[in-house]
Amino acid sequence: MKRSAFNFELPGDLIAQRPTAERDGARLLVVDAANGSIAHSHIRLLPEWTPEASLCVPNDVKVRHARLFLRRPGGGEALLLKFLGNGRFEALVRPGAKLKQGKHADVIDPADNSILAELFVEAELDGGLRIVALHGDAPLDWDGVDSIGSLPLPPYIQRAAGAEDDERYQTVFHSQEGEAVAAPTAGLHLTEELIGKLEQKQCAWRPIRLHVGLGTFRPMTAENIEDHAMHEELYEIPESTALELESALRNRGRNIAAIGTTSLRALEAAWDGANLKRRGATRIFIRPGYSVKTANYLLTNFHLPESTLFVLVSALMGLELAHRAYKTAIQEKYRFFSYGDAMLIKNVIP
Image (cartoon, rainbow, N blue to C red; front, side, top):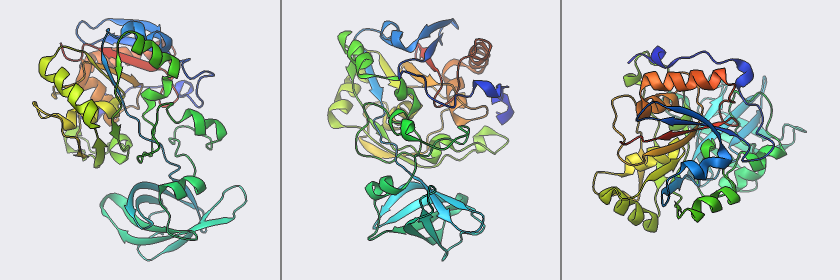
């Protein structure tokens, strides 16, 4: 299929630049993939739309302060993607043409230009990636990076990350582990109170983890979507969660609600039709023609035109219904992208 089939016009004023005043303040568009119906609701009413005794599966990965500012003529940045050990990371750097193998740059505090660490480019990888080494007083790990870096807000949020984002661009249920360079944004809407209301309906809250990297947010550039190569991302499913999910999948006795596309992709990558692999790496690209095998509900935000995530939504409900749902959201002035409103897709698996 052509990438252009997943394009749509989005007014710039619908791109949310800040979160709602309250974490659970978003609107909710409810779309039934089975019959094509569309309803308007609110995220606070999510428990009313979620079947009793569902298995709710969020991504509990921690968003890291993975954006580093570099001192060099004309400026520069590094986005750290994966920790390789001993102060070494896989990263995207800008400007890539200048930061070649063997080059150094100072990591600075943009507020006062003080030097926080040193970055050394060890190697160049395919796709414009680099292996970089980071040293402060000692080689840095993710905890060290969190102390000197900034949250990597998406480029469509046209402001620097601030104190508000340290709280709101992180889920309330995040673990202290993992490496994510983008938030699992559907989970940003959930509060402890909302999770409690789901549990009052005997819904089980069962986090898994996908380490969010380029596979989730790198744009498509190929004319045909089949030619787009996903970047590898790692996932982990706790043993107790895996056993409960396996029972539900084998017997089809419980609904499974994926809280976010990253959770859905992890589930689909792990399930082989009989068992769930507890950990692994995936390049899964869910696109039209793919039949989802695990979750039959998906909570998600509204995604970029021509993105792999809008392609995923189109695979779940069909391209025509996906465009109709997004057109409805635009007409009703729903807020889009990371800090925007949410959509619940029902009956993904009939």
